[in-house]
Length: 160
Image (tube, rainbow, N blue to C red; front, side):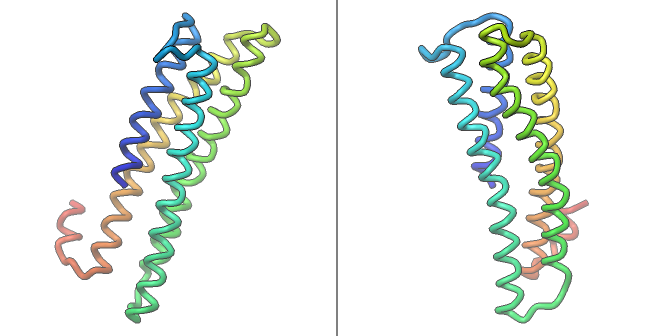
């Protein structure tokens, strides 16, 4: 979970740099704007894939633990509900930003207005923050579910 937060911060910083590069081209770490955009897209997609697999993995683990320990309750359903909250905005953000990344080439060659690229990238950045806010709440709820399964009574008091 901590690596998801760390990589999300790195992705946000890199996306901010890419946005700034759309106004004035400058190299970062000797990488041209196109090269830095490609690196940013790789790190961004890795981060978002890691978040997806985190929720998939914890959901499977909760289900297996409940079966092994013969625990009854709605814990697994709550984990599924968390995925239903996180995935739609996350996947939409991936669509928006990947579209912007692809349109960079068209804007760079003059096939479309650079303002279309900048607008889509700006929308993607704002939506990225929105998606991360939802993910943060889901990470917290995920932790509370696991604490409840483990029988830690303080989980309810920590939630408040």
